[in-house]
Length: 392
Ligand SMILES: Cc1ncc(COP(=O)(O)O)c(C=O)c1O
Image 1 (cartoon, rainbow, N blue to C red):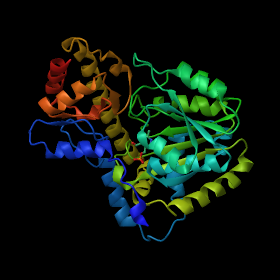
Image 2: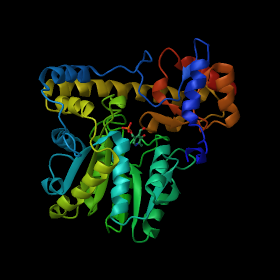
Image 3: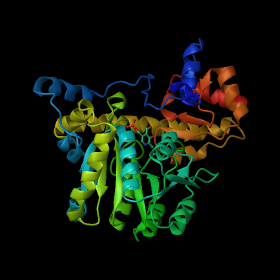
Image 4: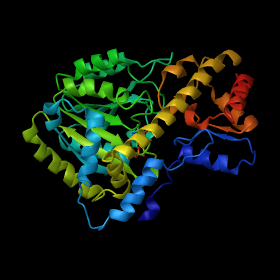
């Protein structure tokens, strides 16, 4: 039976990782893999996470099952960061559960939307490739719209058109901040326009927040999401702690449901619960427990903020340098990068230029021109800019 399976196309990013590993040049540069790197090129465990893990080892007295909803205190500890502390009516309409990473949260959001009757989801493209994969796998139709304009700004009109022309049983998936792969986020005015268009409640917003704190700050990065939530009757929110706590392999995420009325939350949550049970039964505990310990301890919370601030500032610095580098690579306008956010950017390079960068200079990036901004640091950015100037 299994011999009926045809081989799937290899994952392009994994192929790139292999090519990079096989390259023997000492000054090769990896801009493909999507994890944060320090100015020394490392992806270390956060000091706040190490501190929390020590507490966890000392104090955890059982590894018994927690249930499909995971660690409730972890889920609640994140809520003020995502939703704010003040609007108690809004907060009373939100219920959450822990998920295996942001991926699990997106999967649960899409599955629950489908269970509630959503047949079609609008998705700005390009997007994180797993979005389309999850939508296909869950079995909802994908309606694509253009996320960005050629000048590196967000094409909000395309998203607004999608919302205005949507019929019954449709949803829209929006990146909360630090759009992957473009780094192009909606402005405050554009979020307001989206909130207005969504306020009728005919299109269900699914908001994916995977990089809070990596753009402009923890509060700033969810301002748009909060504008939408204040305007709409209901929404689903997928959240990842894997980047902003550096917990990638520990798979730390949360899924929140915002209902029209608090009285509906028990029924909605019970559906999410049974979907989680059927998908993964229960989320892994360790990383979520570490985040919970950090967020319920003032000293560890401050340490985490410091580490997150450093990450963000470093990436803003790299973006500034790249934006200025356009002068040295005539014909290559990188100015928009400075106003974009997060780990990723798409460089306006041709396929030939991308291959030349790889073959002649040992610089590895996705075929779309997507780079991990954090792959650049003081030891390699000059070489990168020189190579860009040469291929431009
Ligand atoms: C837009 C977006 N959403 C969700 C995720 C999922 O993150 P994770 O499952 O690693 O927590 C990612 C990861 O790359 C992402 O870019």
